[in-house]
Image (cartoon, rainbow, N blue to C red; front, side, top):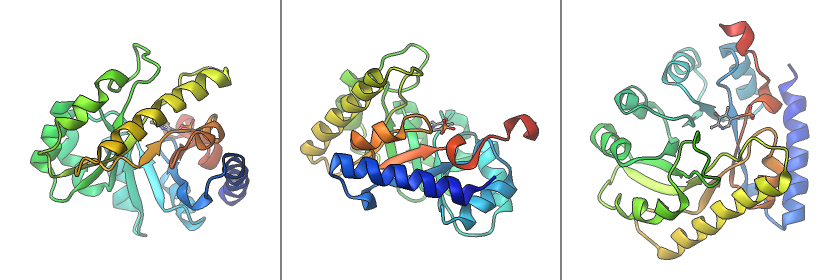
Length: 229
Ligand SMILES: *Cc1c(COP(=O)(O)O)cnc(C)c1O
């Protein structure tokens, strides 16, 4: 796996999407999603200069953190069970999947530092998707103003699994509109300046629509999940 080469190509695509959207490339961060690859390949990713790593299961996160000694910035990107909070909350800098009050309460209880969180939003309102409905985002964020261990730095969504670019784009636009609306409220606990959106198949559209964190797995580090189990 040539992570260096994948990264170069992805950076080029990101660069061009930024030019099309008249954005600065320094505002776009790549989170390398290592959930489906080995420790060895995760170390390769770090050597390629990727220092933001994303995992979606407590076990995967902890295994990698124990094995990997070089410094990394850890993002938890998957749905998080309340009872697993105490295992992971001390080891992450970013949580992309804050989607309910009971999870926020548990983080408030267990965290020893402020966690930068994205509220996960179900923009497309697919039944199977996690996340808060768009219409409930503002009241959810308002309800967190006393949770001083949580800083709402932005919103996160997953686009529907479709090849229809316009559908994907409208989901990203919907998230961006909500992000601006919340940011304009200037809540001290919720600066809400960031947008976590875009994966291997749709990160260019996401960047055109304002993504500041793209979460890229397969296109960057591949998928070894068949071999790992
Ligand atoms: C797996 C996953 C990704 C990365 O998906 P790819 O299609 O492999 O890039 C991004 N975000 C979340 C929440 C994921 O679970």
